[in-house]
Structure formats: structure tokens, C-alpha cells
Image (spheres, rainbow, N blue to C red):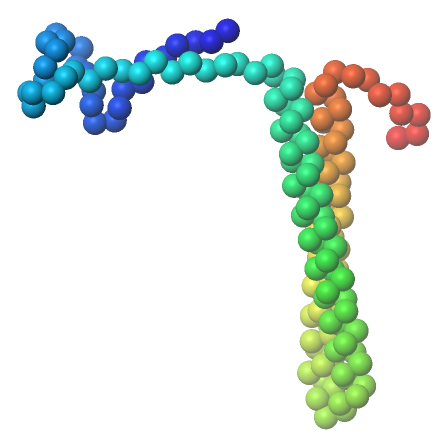
Length: 138
């Protein structure tokens, strides 16, 4: 069912105590309110779509985390190679290697977190449809 609400423009409020004369003080017509109708969408369908959208966002973030972990890991290996190749600056390369390795672990943890958020949203989307899935193993 649609509900009707009357919305007035921000700067053109019609005061309740003034009668509508047909002409305002500037010689133009009286401003009237517009009727806005809204439709109510079934709650289950809207909720399902919201969960699917969140699941898609978490999947995208998971892939970004995986790419970050891969890039940081590759940079850590490169710095390890540079530490062996350049003995004069080996200490600097080892420090940079450790920082890159830490970043790789952090990005991997972020990807793992987003993977579980994606699974949670997938399960919530299934539950919002009302259908029971018969999963035997988990």
C-alpha cells in the first residue's frame, strides 16, 4: 500500500494560520505542496538484496587483501635478495624486508577477515529468503 505525504519546499512553507488567497505578496500564485507516493517493497526481498550486495563488497575487499599480501610478500623477497646482494646496506634491506613481511601478514589477515564476513553475509542472505538448505557437512 502506498502512503501519501505532503512535502513542502524548504523556503516556501505555507503557514497554517494564513488562508489561501490565491495570490501571495509578490503577485504570483500560491505555492502548493506536492504529493509524494512511496511503495513498500517486501522486506525479505529487500533484505536479501542488501545481504547479497554486502557479500559482493566483502568479496571485493577480500581480493584486495589477497593482492596486498601478494605484493608485500614479493617485496619482502626482493628485499631479502637485495640484502644478500648489497652487503654494505644489508641492515637497511633486512629492516625493510621485515616491514614488508609484517605488511604481508596484515594484508593476509585482512583478507581472511573479509572471507569470513563474506561467508556470514552469504548465510544471512540464505536465511532471509526463508528457504532451508540441507547442508550435511557444515
